[in-house]
Amino acid sequence: MDEFSTIFPRGGENVAYAQYFTGKSYLNMLSTEQVSIGSVTFEPGCRNNWHIHHASRGGGQILLVTGGRGWYQEWGKSARALYPGDVVNIPPEVKHWHGAAKDSWFAHLAVEVPGEDTSNEWLEPVDGAQYDAL
Image (cartoon, rainbow, N blue to C red):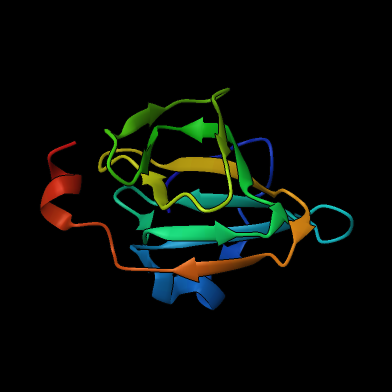
């Protein structure tokens, strides 16, 4: 690993969710009470699969970018570059992905918005050719 760091420790390799990522990520759960908050670090080129945060009421996710350079994209829209200090509010029921730029480490806090009947649906990987074109 290189010297990339953010204000939160990197955490261990994200093996529990590795099947939903292209590349290697790391997870440090900062809070599992009241509101779930995880610090996720992506190696260069790592991104998660398309996914949806379902909820019958409330729910969704908030990303707080803490380091590096990355991408966020909603289905049917152009990808948005992300930098430290950026905030992404992801409503429930929106298909999306997020991850590192191909030449940069990337880190964000993932805040799970409380809601009713919440669940995550993991979908297909991001198309490699489309990702490489970013």
